[in-house]
Length: 408
Image (cartoon, rainbow, N blue to C red; front, side, top):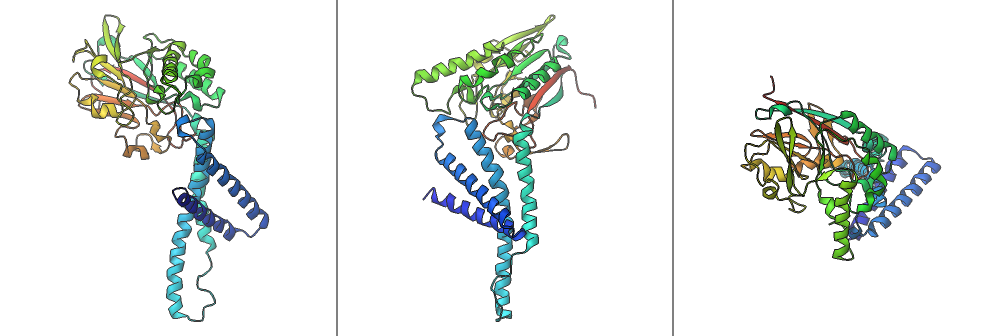
């Protein structure tokens, strides 16, 4: 019964979509090709989903199937909604007219051509957007710059720049040239510090094997390259044959950071020195409201005081929302990722920002502040689940630390 209900819904959506095409054209070739493509796509999607073993994790095939399902059925669902509303109006009209005109030849009036045109026009918007997201959007890297002012920033760090990347998800990549371009774009920023805030793979360490040399090409900044782990780096979205196999994969994932010349911080901190001054860079393991609490902020900050200037790397922004912003140790700036901005939304820089993910995470993309404590949530470098990006583009963040207050 659980599988029957979705199939019934699927057939209803398909029926209404065919009605829209049939109302627009009577050409048998067009209708035939549409039916064949729809049936093939439906069978492929249904077969793929019914045979998908969630315990084996995401791979490029499952990403393709998810993308195909979205690009096929979101437009068709919109067609269904428009034509279903029309059918309600046709039913009301038919009931009224049956009392007025008892000699009507048919109960329902014919489906209106212009309503089908409206339905198809509306459906074309998500179809084109999702197609763009899967072909161009997912590699449409944007450099976003942000200046932050702090009264207690050590003098030597005035003007220091940090490049942040997050959520690489190397197991999803399918275009070597685009990734090389993104690495070159990171290098062009020539920041003083390069930070990566977790999720280097989807599940398996081997996903990164084809990309080691590419990411090894990231430049060596003056103040170093540091990284942390994200929820996907623990391999918890896969059913391993043994605990040993899971642990070996986890160790291999941690070793990836060494291979690409990043210093992985596991609930620890380092002092970054510049001239006679220093700041503390704190890195915690993943701490998330929904995805495990491995991060140990107290351990990572052992020996630090409230007066130390601190930059914290914590993958999941729910950590800042629930813990970090309230901590008396005072973490000046937290850098997170994780949300990807859902890879779907609307952004007009400086004016408007919306994504469904904002109903799950209060801090989901960009800069947020509370009582002088800041968090910046990177929109992610790669992609996962849906193999594309619509409205929320892959991000390379460049943050400049400034001494003093921002001028009005």
